[in-house]
Image (cartoon, rainbow, N blue to C red):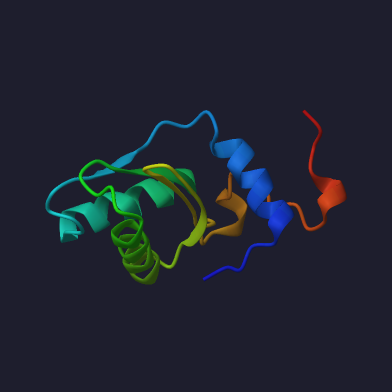
Length: 110
């Protein structure tokens, strides 16, 4: 799992702002089919939002996020309300869509 610095999380949150959730977690929680769709979404997009439809308690959401991160090897960027932002860079360096800044001064201004 990649450890992100604060400015990198800030950069990823900015990129994720306009994204719609690609994965919805419902009553059944984490299933093999759900993990397959998370894997597919991370492979295609690197940065995704996961929405918790039926889990409103913070402790439950945190436990589900930890389980997702452990199984997928992704990194937790942030949780905002009932939405989690998750990032995992593409394994093939040439195919990476998101280039993380190495220093805070590399973040492009908006």
